[in-house]
Length: 235
Image (tube, rainbow, N blue to C red; front, side):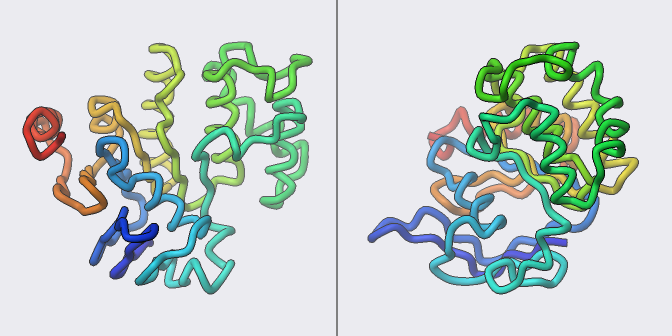
């Protein structure tokens, strides 16, 4: 589904990412972990063609993301608040995304019904604009917005941040269910090792822009990751 070949990103004389090869198959829940500055957001930005690579290419479904737009219909993402439209209400924002993805308002309304529990009665049918919501509720809007149209690939950067424990639990269940029932390919970046391990079939660790671990998740994965970040290599 996704192929990364000889990709690098250099700012001035500083190389922030260098990945010779990475392949992510369809339906995989892919967790990306690393310290600040490891290159996680840079990789996601390259995947979404938000920045230009210094070398190499990334393909989604066989399409070079820097040369084609065909992959965009397969891919959705929520990276940060800049993906939101603050002057819209949550409903208006969802309708806007639905229109972009070929969904009418009625189908969006039906789609949103499954997230009643996730929203906890705080998102829909209110008078607040997106910009006036709490950070946690903005995160909920961004995540659900990324799911509209059931894209093949969903990229979420730090999805568990700013969410209360109950919502984190609901989000983990949502990711697992969607991965299994819709064969969605999830790419999830997080500082939370436990949450990421729980929802990912595979964990890749970035350190100073390079892949230093590529692990199929098992009962030992969390301990292995904790040991890595507790050691010198994780500092």
